[in-house]
Image (cartoon, rainbow, N blue to C red):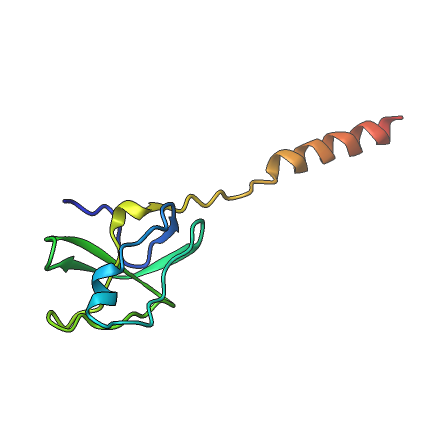
Length: 107
């Protein structure tokens, strides 16, 4: 599976039903899970040795190490989408104000 995310990228959690049953069986607790709609920054991208797929780690979320693989538990990229940040462009409103000022001056 390809991963189109990059380290440092902001993403939004779109699926928050993470499978942690195996961890509970192994006696691992203290998980920090992303919440639906939460904005996160990718800290690292690892290859999940169990499923041979990418696994995302996030700034502000640190989870226990897997007892056998000795790496931090991460999250599937499928549960996230890139954050689209819209830049506000006020130049249109500035032009309207200039035209309004010019109109008021002629009145």
